[in-house]
Length: 144
Image 1 (cartoon, helix red, strand yellow):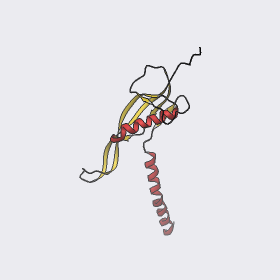
Image 2 (image 1 turned 30 degrees about the horizontal axis):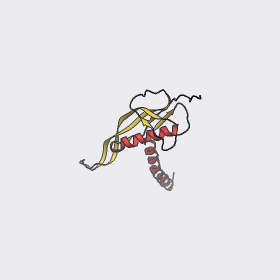
Image 3 (image 1 turned 30 degrees about the vertical axis):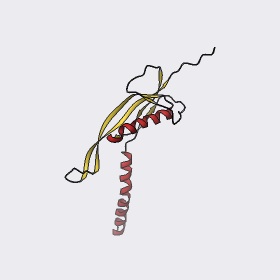
Image 4 (image 1 turned 120 degrees about the horizontal axis):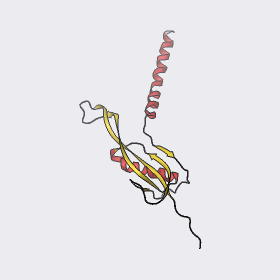
C-alpha cells in the first residue's frame, strides 16, 4: 500500500468516526415501549384519561402495557403522565392503572459545576413511568 493510499484510508476512517459515534449515542437513547394486547379505535385528543396507582372496581379489558422514556427528576411526573395519557388515547383506552414511577441511574458526561474538574461524568437519576391501559366494559343499552 502506498503512502498516499494509507493517508486516504486514514482520512476515510476519521471521516466516518463522527457518524458512528452519533449512531451509537442515538441507539442508546431512552425510549418508551408498548405491548398491545387488543386493538381499539383511537380516542379524541381531549378525551380524559384516568390514572390510578392501583386497580379499579369497574369491569374492564386490558388493552396494553406501557413504559415511558426516562425523564429527569424535575420533569418526570408531568412528562411521564402525559406520555401515558397520549398513548392510552391512541390505543383507545379509558384509563391507565397500576401506574408506577421507577428510578434509573445513568452516567452522563458534561459540565459539573460543583466538581473539582468542571467537566466529566456524573450520575443522574431519571424516572420512567409504567402502567396498564384499560378500556371499561359498559353494559349494552336496553331498549324498552
